[in-house]
Image 1 (cartoon, rainbow, N blue to C red):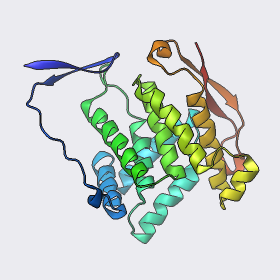
Image 2: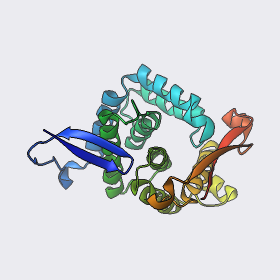
Image 3: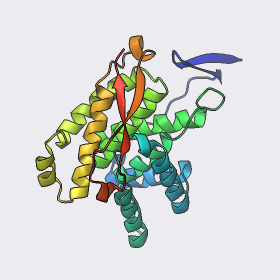
Image 4: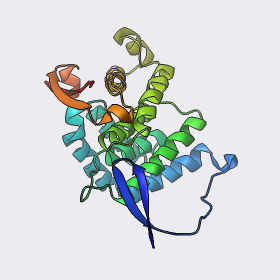
Length: 249
């Protein structure tokens, strides 16, 4: 026997009927930085693969999503990965989360529907965002992860999740202080490249939030690409890149 499960008004899935079962919920004592770091590393290994596969997934992201939604510095990201490999150390939780979100946002529907494996990955990432937030984590990498997760939700018409996520990103960004002027960002981040990333991330958050993402108007929302030089091209290695602009209905 099958039941119809609706994720949202645009996505229907048929799942077998089963008896209710208790889902595992971590206790507060288990939510240590080392446990979360290890768990996220295992998630990267399970969903993306080994280091070479992670590099391949990142390269695909930078060839695709990055070209129209530039928020992450490719050189900086690759340096972070290289440092982990050289030091044979565990990846920071927020970097593993960012890797997962970069992989997720590149996934598309199969036969007009998102595979259950992709939906499971999405649900896991949402859970990790909540857990890291509960532990007081708020970094630029985590903010970029939130933003990519919101882009995924918008792209697949996941409402009201997209609507709620876009607003939460604004609060997280203000809490981190990346809504400041360019001069203030340079003071906040010792690395100028990090300051540029923060500025680009704030632009992305502003773009996703400056639209009515309620389900009532979601089907009328249009996205266009506009070529604008927005960053120091010597650092980002892009002369002109497309900026995603939301046109309200």
